[in-house]
Length: 237
Image 1: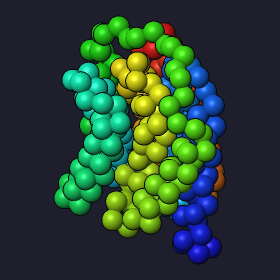
Image 2: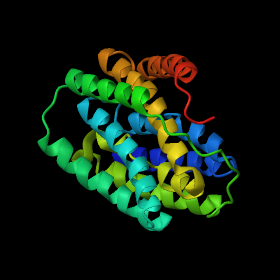
Image 3: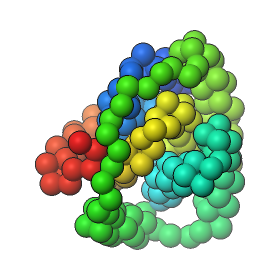
């Protein structure tokens, strides 16, 4: 299939996911749905299912994106400016990271797992109550913006490598609609990111196995890990 056509189909698919998410009203439910690796799955299909250390770098940057928005808004920056600045920083830092940082997949996997464990054990802040948020933008507007954004980024995947897969496609709108519960969103996703890490590791170590089977196995790993983690660490109740 033509590469441009694949990018278009993938971009539209992610746009549709955001359209569906836009129908939700609960800030807590948005945080849970946002943690599902659906856009990541679509992006993996678009990029041929290649998983390597750059995907883990991207996952780390995705976590930082959410905490960056939360921090900037807390410091008085408007949500839209914080959103744009954090997204741009994601791309810039990600580009230099995948270009100049040399680290094996196993090493990056271990570093992320240790950092996550430290967060899980040390994070003690009480989170905000989940609230019903008003829609800031029409779902069709979100669909259009994210589709265009996704197409541009997929077209640049030769330069951005695995960070395209984890780019916060839904995050750019999730943070706007979760303005009152940004810390809940960031903490919930950080907690659940260990499931995404398990998914990436499963796909990577299955090697040349059929892509559909690898991604299905990755989802199974994600769901198993999330089920275990959600019973041990509770940040968003």
